[in-house]
Image 1: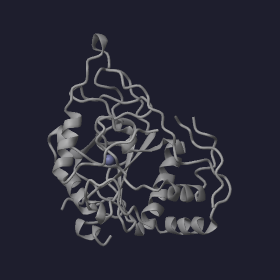
Image 2 (image 1 turned 90 degrees about the horizontal axis):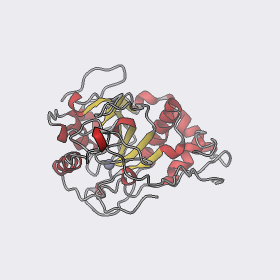
Image 3 (image 1 turned 90 degrees about the vertical axis):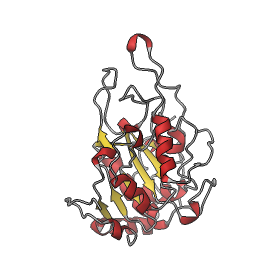
Image 4 (image 1 turned 120 degrees about the horizontal axis):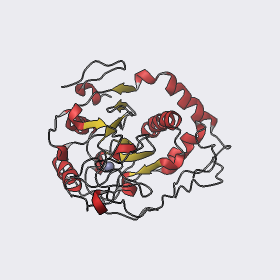
Length: 297
Ligand SMILES: [Zn+2]
């Protein structure tokens, strides 16, 4: 067990297990193509897949310049602008939950090999904007404990390193694993709105340098490569809305900046999070006042 003390409550692995809307304008930031379901059967395969995605050397750009990212695919956010029709009961519930944040949110420092700095320049010396500007949603496929154990395990080889900033269990417990100021390794070969960053010439571009990665624990009937499962719990949607609301305010993110691994993945192998209900997120972010903003982008 590698949990170290931290200003926020730190939980041990053993404890983890315990652990009407008016729709007006859509956030048309800029639709993802359908991808196959995750074909994973083990965390080892997850690591191997990351390895494959990371292990491909990008095509060299002209005169040693940075290889160009793919043509931008538009992202039509399912979240829509909403300033009225807020459910007061949801707002009260979320506000009450926020007041007792220490009872459901904890920091678990993971092994430092599994995350890194946000690089101020790419592998070709070009400056990079390290400000987080996309939130990528994931699911764990397997249990939260299994995922955390992977992140606590040192992975000296770059190809094996993997992490999310934040994990949310089926019981609504939130584990902060990587500080938002750091770069979590949540996606391999990926881009968002035609943007990626290449921070190592051995690997293709990725959104990791400017992304925040949030992952949901998959329900037990989802530990397979089926295209859907039972979906996520009310507690998960509540906690996720509070975490996202926090990030939206901290980094001035438009709601359209919230997307999925399925969308940003270029390799065509990722379809997570499966069975995600955007309407549940809409209800909660609207209740928190985060969707009453000018149309994004
Ligand atoms: Zn993912």
